Image 1 (cartoon, rainbow, N blue to C red):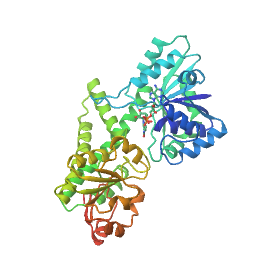
Image 2 (image 1 turned 45 degrees about the vertical axis):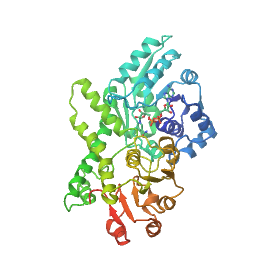
Image 3 (image 1 turned 60 degrees about the vertical axis):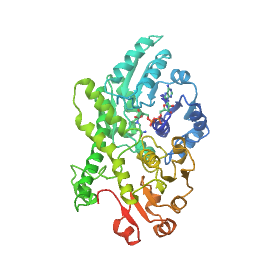
Image 4 (image 1 turned 180 degrees about the horizontal axis):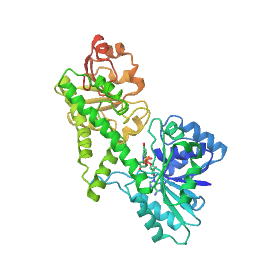
Length: 432
Ligand code: NAD
C-alpha cells in the first residue's frame, strides 16, 4: 500500500516517519518547498526528539520520500493522510480552507480508489464536506472513502507517542476503509477503537478540551491556594492519587499554549454554538487560561513595582519543553506585556529562539542570550516560563551572583521554595 502525507508540519512529518517505521511506503508533500528540500536532505524541519534519526534511516532505506508535487503524490498513492493546518479564525471556528483546497486537488487527481484520512483536527461533520467537495470536483468516476484518524501525539515526545500509542481511533463508514486502516495500524491492533466518523472527529476535540479543562481547573484552584495557606502542588498530588482523577494535566502554571488546546477549545465552543449546544463550561476554561498571563505579570510587578527600564531575564520561550514550537506560547504574551511596560528583556530557550526571533525581533530592548547564565547577567529579575529540564538543574548560586537583584518568578513551579529562598532569592511561584 502506498501512502501519501499531505502537509508535513509537526503532525505530518511525524506521521510520515512513523508510518515508514511501521514498514509502509510513504511519500510526504507540502506547499512550503523548503520543508520538502530539508526533509529530502534528512533534515527535520522541526525539532522533535528522535525524528531526524528515523527520517535519515527511512530515506536511506528508500521507503520514505518527499515530493514538491502534490498532484503526483495524490495520483501515485492509495491512502492519503491529510495533515494540513486548521488554524483558528476570528470567530473561534477552525479555518478549513486548507482542508478544502486539498480535497479539491484530490478530486482533480482521482485516478483509482483512494482512502482519504483526516489526520488534522477537524470539526465534527467535516468528512461530509470532504466527500461533497470530492464528488463536486472529481474528473473521473472512481470510488473513494473518507475516514477520520485523529492524532494524539504530544509535541516533545511525538515520535514516541506515534510509535507507542495509547489508542488508535479509526472513524469509518465502510468495511473497506476499516480494513485498510486496521492493516496500516496492524502492529497496534489491541489498541484500535473503530467508530463512525462523527464520533472519531469528536473524540479528538473532546479529549483536548477535557485536558485543557483540567489545566484551567487546577489553575483556578491555585488562585484559592494563594489566598490561603494551601499548596497547589500538594492539592494536585492529593487529587491525582484518586485514579478517577489521575495526576496528569494537574500542573498549575502560566496556562496552556500551543497550536492545539487554545484553538481546539474555541473550535468546540463554536461547533456547540452552530449545533445549538451551550458549551459555556469551555468558555470559562478559555477565560481562566487567558487570565494566567496577567496574573503572572502581576507577580512580576509585585516584585519590581515599576517595570520601565528594568532588566528582566526570561528563560523558556517554547510553549512546552522539548519543542521549538512557539505557537500560542504564553511567553509571547508575557514578553509583549513586559515590552509595553518598557522593560529590557534577555531571552533564552534551548530550541525555540530562531522561531521567537521572527515574532519578537532582536533590538536594544530585546537580547537573545547564548545561555541562561548570559541571560541573567545584571538583571533585576528572572522569569521561568517553560519548564525545560535544563532550567531545573541550573547552578542557582552562580545565577544569584550574576544577577543585580536575586528575584526569581517561577511560572512553572520547578523549584522548591525553601531551597531557593535559602540560597537568598526572593521567590515567587504559582499557588503556593
Ligand atoms: P503545521 O502548521 O505544523 O503543519 C501543517 C502543514 O500543512 C504545513 O507544513 C503547511 O505548509 C502544510 N499545508 C498547508 N496547506 C497545504 C496544502 N494545500 N498542500 C500541502 N501542504 C499544505 O500544523 P501541525 O501542528 O502539524 O497540525 C496539523 C493538524 O494536526 C492541525 O489540524 C492540528 O490541530 C492537528 N494536530 C496537531 C498536533 C500538534 O501537536 N501539533 C497534535 C495533534 C493534532
